[in-house]
Image (cartoon, rainbow, N blue to C red; front, side, top):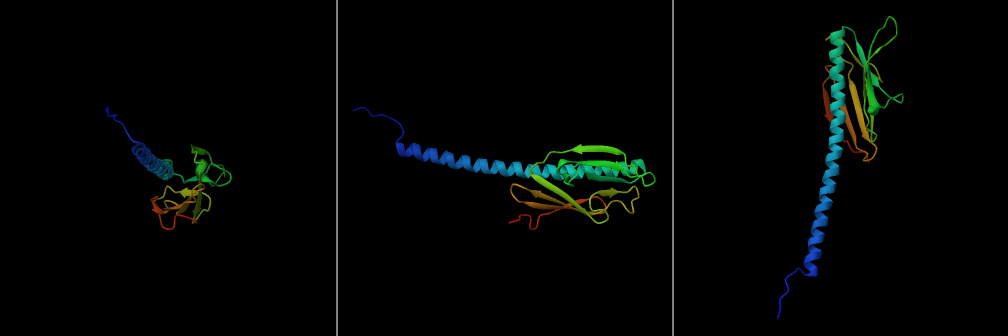
Length: 163
């Protein structure tokens, strides 16, 4: 009698089921990592824009402002850095960041200025403080970035998921 070596049907089904479960976990963790990377990218872009604006205010010797690139006040499409000139009312654009975060709505609410961030060249009144709200339209996650007078950003992770 010849013995045939091979796998039984139950062994094959168990192996395929095990591979399917591992694939499901890897896809879930990969999408979570992409989501967290996208959120961290937004935070880093905002920090970079604020740091650059602070540097420009000091080097130019005039106040500057950051405002959204979008007329609907959604900061997810980019930021414009302008030099504030109170005498002429003309605010020339110094730099423009163009971002593309279609799944995120980013809004700003400031203490002194509700729709823009004013950065002064005077260290006593360095920056208008307030907070950004990052809202993911797909996952309904809400993250708050708090900006203090010195330009430091703190992430508020409490109650960041809206149900």
